[in-house]
Length: 416
Image (cartoon, rainbow, N blue to C red; front, side, top):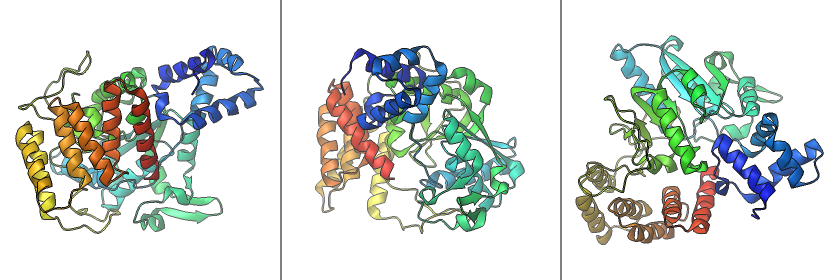
């Protein structure tokens, strides 16, 4: 993408306002967004549009609407909703204050917060026990969420039996029933705006999935800080599967009793980092990696779910290595990884990925890259390896290669 001054000004405005890393957006998407706005305004050239954008907050909002493309569906990755049900039940049993507060940020067109409500209702949890808020920067997305009418593209989970319970078929699509719509409060705001996030209050659970990979590093750090203050001590944060490694060296800790895409705000006082992240960890310091096996058990109540698969011995070995790495015993974890891969088992992407993360945590980025490339050879769609390779390329100053890996990861993510 040619970086003439006018185009660069537009990019800078987007990064300053929503933290967008333009390298994560395809050039065709970016160019179409600008072209649509220029046509709507009757502006003939990029320079004229950049000048108009510089002085109009309203036009910036409209450009953001064109750039931000919603990509979500009901019960996208079921595991967080199963865990949510358990968390609300536990809060009730432990006589914690109710209602249990849940935030979806960004909530896009509403499928995620509505899924949270449906999961809780299906589990028999009374509406008085929980409170759900959805927030997003896109006014257009929030209007769709409030309307509550969805097409087939919003029903892509393996089990869509919930649709028969909570939706009515209409000429325009599937209309979500009032018993669900009335239980979500929507509001518009920017996740980078501390004033906005402060006004939201605090929450027991936050869904913040598949946004961080599109943000600049500076914006990511701002989001970490805002999310930290939005969570109650001990609260749970759900991230996207490809985003968990971004939480290395943040105040959040991985939830040991749930899954690797869930993090917690520590219950003790934690100092937020004001400086860049500290150096990579060595043996003796715990690290956080992305666990690639799925949530190991079935839902305890009827939440839309796939039939559980019995655990395999290989899964037990993988979990053992994960535990060693999480407790800082990196050398032992690496040795077990190598032992497993040298054995009779067929090599798998997740083992090469895990050893790559360990080597990176030990300060061996070149070896990590070699292992991650092997993971991609075995599974070209391995999302976590693509994301980590992009980060390592960025750290090495190879921005073109980082852009290449980000785009591949984005395509995998959008395919679901």
